[in-house]
Length: 405
Image (cartoon, rainbow, N blue to C red):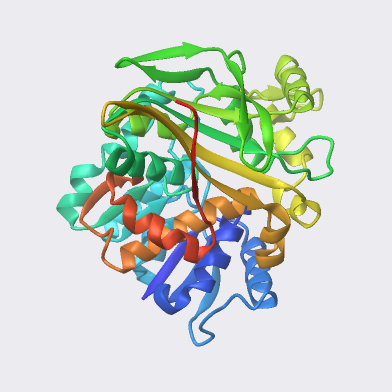
């Protein structure tokens, strides 16, 4: 057995550690990135943390441009992995999926292939380009698993579990995501700054009564009392799983909410106002053409560098309201993850950790033959019981809190 992991950023770092911890099942691991040094740093960390479970299995690195289809196909043919795990930025998804299709190799990713704020790529259209591969994956006899992170990912599994076991009728699904940790920096992003800033500046779309509603980003806010981390302000945002849950989970309203501090939003609003979050190229007085957002990415701390000093916890979950046996019911299904614990285990913070564990849980279910049917699937289409039984053994527990209906 073998894995090809593409991507060596913060999420890729954590995924590689979790792959290594489970290499008795996953087999040989090759980590591929445009920057070979990033892969080698991950391998050094894995060995330094003694996270390579079976030392007889290969752990290697290779340089690759994930935007180059021909090179990707050549690499996959050379390595012959049983599964490609895409831990790269979302804009490489389609190329990697095509390479997997061309080589008849199983595929897994953690986020949608769009930026969610560009016209034609917003939540109502999210996944359309990836879903277009569905029949071709099935005809090729290969499996594709989409959105196997935490959000998207686990929160959708929570919704599928609630739909299967806890409710007869669902009125609303609210995905609630708050990071109550402190990295000690005045301003930084917890994963790739470019992906992060694109994600949070788009209009928010939510699904209600079989229609899409749109509001400006950060204009719709509520306060929610989270387990462990307490009351937090959360803001409605466009997010991948709103689209896939609207497709596969029967609910009257579906919305995604994320917590932001007042200071974070102040920084964000200033940067957006002066154009630093723009992807439109500008030319400097020296005649150099650059994208402002890429300049900001270069200035901000590398998310990996935040991990050693990160303290506090994340709380991410799915709040479901509806009816069971004619009675109103409200539950919050959630996970708590500690930044310091994540660093001790794999030298990274909880944001990356909570993405890595579900990805490897899904990968293991594929190898076990439980999530391996040919075709292309979002995670909420698959059996949630298998996933929620395995995930705690990979590193993330989950709880159900009954709320006042």
